Image (cartoon, rainbow, N blue to C red):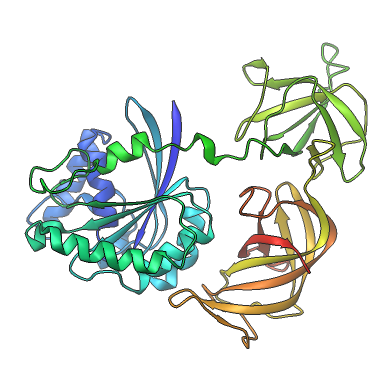
Length: 418
């Protein structure tokens, strides 16, 4: 079955964890002992009802404060699809967690409290979702039960969000009125809102088309490991293992190896279950070539006439994640891009972005925790990259502090530095 990854986002107390709990409960995706544990905890907390948010808020601090702090991943399936949910935090100080959780999502669900409308965090998370190039955005206008399922209240929030979304690059925007607490329009269509003619949230998640979201044109295969078994049976086997980052690879296809520029042809493509006739994202495979050429970790296989950018100077949008240090021009870090690692120098901070107003602060001299800005980087080794808008895998990277080995930034490549 096809897999859909989606992230939930929105302001504090807009009902993200409750919505996921309702999805899991109504699709019968939780075990009896999990439900009993949630029921006991709900009684201990003095709740008048079973608090389904406890299915995702697993940290003690989250339950005590009633907020989401870390990203919680949950898995469930229906007869049509498998799903991985990333429940991301709403607090502004946990923006970095939201970036982490949404970085691999195919779809983002932004919750908005119908009583409060579009607030700062709603705009922040909608912008980050578009910055991460999440192709599908669903706005769930929650707590409709508290306004008597009023259509006018839903339309007001819808118009407010559309006005902000006009400033963003949103390719697919859907609005659904829901009540996560009571399950209205979550799994089944609600009889309380006959004026709404669209699908329930689950139906939309099952039917949204994601197959064309992957880049199946630009063949990209970052080499992660060279397989050379030391046994008599496989003494002549030499394969290159990795995950397909773009395009379609088939035996017989001509390829070129970067950075060496050597050319060869794909002899076979192997998986754990045996040889396959083609490989596409995000399959993990081993590629064998007809020629015995030098290929190692960090190299990339691509088409001779369709190659990524190769360079050491890049412009990128960076979300800074470190509490202990700021990103400033002249800072030296390590960069991890696909399977390639290098050292990197921050040459310039072009501007810091106010994600609430989308205003560019061009006089900024640093990026602090959770700040997002455009920077120019210079690496010690050439990287093989595409623009992030074209390929989210070959267009993204992480920055690492060389002293502590802590991840301090996540970046999306705009293109070669001009």
